[in-house]
Image 1 (cartoon, rainbow, N blue to C red):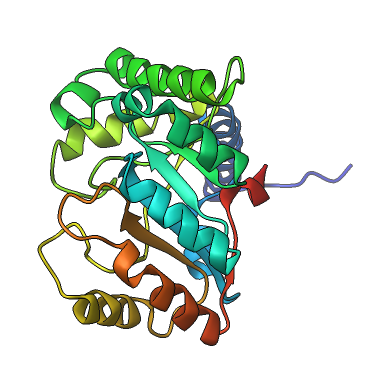
Image 2 (cartoon, rainbow, N blue to C red):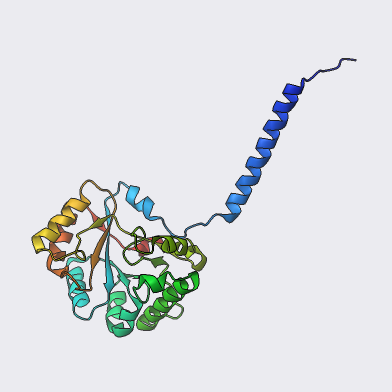
Length: 251
């Protein structure tokens, strides 16, 4: 009878490998069960795409004078866009929201108050603002239990305003079947007063050498009238090979 001798060192190595394999397996199972899966799409996937797709977005509306002018230009150029509306503005101008929807544009959720201190006060407050805005949109367009599924943080997800609380809140978005989106191109129409030429050049510079882009503009009229440069901006992006789409593509 032959006996096989295994040294203590080899036993230690085999045991260590077995233990490492066991820990890795347990970690994988735990991580998979507890990971947050973002529904629909990730903005990072859009940013990294080499396709020339343009998602034109307008924040802080609706407005009963500015938004209709934006809609007229979009209709003239046969371009569909994405409107991130503020809930309290929706309650003021439901007919404008109805026109946005009937024109085939995407309606995103921008919170009800646009007040960062209120919006990110707690998870419950965050969800409440989103739900109130969805309810207002649904009432305006005649759809019960409306859900936009796409949220945009006032000032963006990476701004320093309430950054820590903001990050905690947006991690909970998948719980209510939501994702969020920022932008990677802008014309700075909400930063300070610019001439039409300056707004246009801001857009050109911001979009340079990029594939798919999410463009931030505003239809609030608070600082600049973006509609003054909107047609030139769209025609420029078209000349650069961009195709305009909405977030409906992901649903």
